[in-house]
Image (cartoon, rainbow, N blue to C red; front, side, top):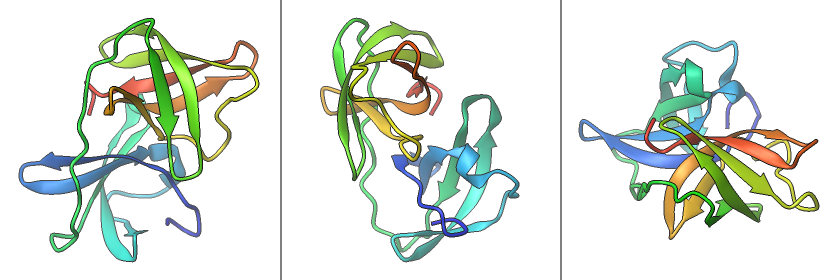
Length: 148
């Protein structure tokens, strides 16, 4: 929680023996590095914004048990799923670059506001985090796991 807003945890990373959450940074707009957020009742600290990719890194307290997310590389023209605690949405990776993925969704089952930062999985590995959707052509953009 940040200022009463829920956000989707996209991945939990281990960097230099510390645990970090990767989440959509636009949730934290107008905030500063060092601000505190609630993570399952524990206090995390916003440590870095990857401005070009809409990703915030939030450091978890050292006493917070966390399972590190398995990251993978996107397979183009293969099925994937967007997963968060509210929804599972099938999609297909139609383009994969070094930093961004393009996803195709069913027009009847599109991500909604609040799904930003949701992990995109293929073969049970996170290949990216949802960044934006284009309702007009049922596509979305995700930050590649290579950026994380």
